[in-house]
Image (cartoon, rainbow, N blue to C red):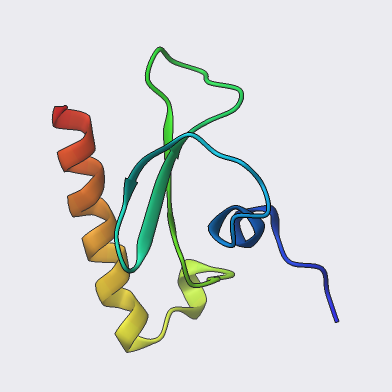
Length: 75
C-alpha cells in the first residue's frame, strides 16, 4: 500500500499546518515556502489524484474550491 501523500497527512493532522480556513470538505493553509506575501493552499479533504479523474460528485468540489479561493482572496 502506498504511503499517504503529504496533503492527506496534513488533513489527518499528522503534519502541522497554519490553517486559515476549514470546512467539511476543504482545508486551506499557508504555504511553508511562500512565493508571495499571501500564499495559501486550498485542498479537498478527500484525496483526488487528478482533475481528469473527477467523478460527477467530485466536480462540485472543484466549483466550491474556486468559490472558497475567491472568498479567501477578498480577505
